[in-house]
Length: 276
Image (cartoon, rainbow, N blue to C red):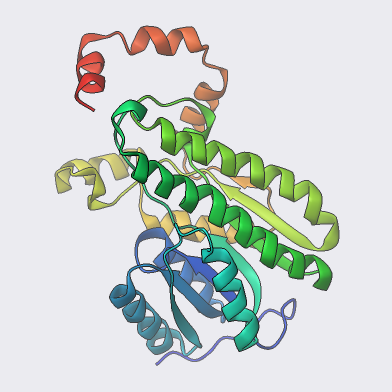
C-alpha cells in the first residue's frame, strides 16, 4: 500500500475531490491523478460494481479515503441528492470534476426522445446544479477548484452528434461565464476540450488505434487526465490537450458554415448521414 501524500495546504484537512463518471475512462484517471496527490476521493457513477472496484483500488494503491457514491446523474434531482449526502457526511468538497458524459451517434430526427432527455440532463442540468451547490460553498470559503469536461465538438455544429456537441457547447459557455463569476473569490474554473480518446468505444482495430495515438489524433485517457489536473491546479481557464486537437479546434472556430454544408454533400459522408 502506498504512503499517503501530504495534502496541499490550500485545502482543509478533511477535504475531498468529487469526480463524476469516475468508474471508468477519463474519470477513473482523474481520480487516480488526484489520489496520487493525496486527495481523498468521492467517486460518483451509475455503474455501482465498477465504482466500488475503483474506490477499493484507490484505497489500496494510494492509502487515501475513497467513497463510492452511486447516482444516476441523468435524474433531475441527482445533483441535489449528491450535495445533500456530502453535507450530511460532512465531506468538504473543494475539488469538483464534472466528467460524466455519454456520446450518441445519430441525427437528431432519429434519436429517441428519451435518450435526448438523458444526455441533456446528464451534461447540462446535473453539471449546472452541481456547480451551483458546490460552487456556492467554495465561494463562501474563498477556496476551491472546478473542472468541467467539454469537447472539441463544442466549437462547431457536428451532424450525427448534434445533441452531443450542443450540450458540450453549453458546458463551454457555462465554464467560461463561471470563471468570471468565481475567480476573484478564490475559486478556479477550468474547461477541458479533448478530441478523440483512445478507448474501445470507437470500435477500431488495435493497430489502427495505436497508429492514431502515435500521430496524436487520439490521446490516452491517462494523458488527458494528467494534463487536465495540471491545468486545474494552475488555475487555467481552458485546456485543449494535444496539438492535433488544438489544430482542429482552431480550424473549426473559423470555418464558415457554407464549407461544412458542402462537405456533407460528399457522397460517402451523405450516405453515412442517411444511415444514422
